[in-house]
Image 1: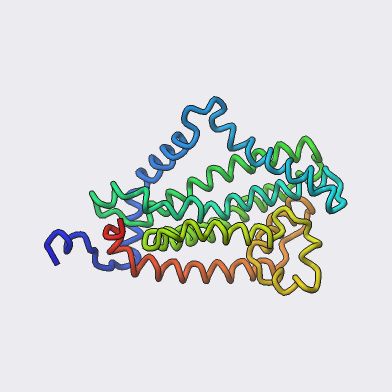
Image 2: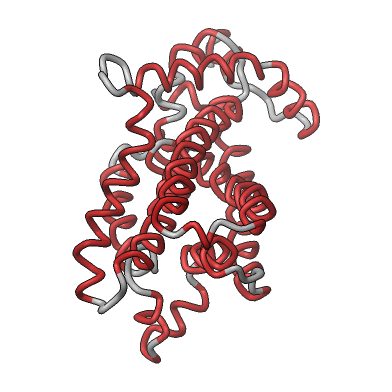
Amino acid sequence: MTMVEGERIRRPIPLFHYLAETWRYRFLIGHLVGADMRSRFRRSHLGILWALLQPLLLSLMFAFVLANIFQQEFKTFALFVFAGVVLWEFLTGGISVGMHSLLQAEGHLRQARIPALVFHIRSTMHCLVLFFFGMLSFFLFALVINPAVVTVYWAIYVPAFTGITLLMVLPLTMITSVINMKFRDFQQGIGLALQFLWYLSPVFIAREVFKRPELAWWDRINPVAALCDLFRDPMLYQRQWDPMDVYVFLAWTAAAWVFAIITVWRNEKRIVFYY
């Protein structure tokens, strides 16, 4: 091994020191998130308004078609679908955006010993900003189409929901970014897997479909179904969280964190060799 290679391979460092090093780069994270948002909407006439319009138009399209198929009232079903689209974009953003976080950081990681977590947080914050705009669009749509659903539950549960979802999005970003670095075919296969999960979760399909006996077992363990319920129950139906949904989601989140920590810890010191 050459001296340069020896310098590039970093020895594992204690967790608290690693987090302190990450905190040192908090201003870089803010700068990169801002740059990502400007790049996303560069040369667009509507700019950031697309972050409001995209989930709205997508939800209306699905609701218009599926309300008739499932014999649902359009106003009620449109809110149901809009809620699913907003949370789905947030959750899967940890994969679709996050898996590129280390690939996009090549220039930084080749020049300095920056913790990989910096770039994982960058991608997660990117998804969080888009989620905020999606929530604003959802809030305004609810006020127009059915203001009765906008209650004090929103003020209580939106921050809580955002927090627990971030706990899932960040480890997904960590896991997928490392796997995508090592196996470039991953980004092709994961798209198919997400489509499969999209159709097997109550994101836009009526909730009653998944209560059928042949799908009940899957509904009980599906983290996306639990997340949908955690979002919709207080927002649309003024119900408190079902403890079983909380347990299922937190169990999957804990498993994701264990896998993420192991994956990053074992691979971070060799990231520069995966480019």
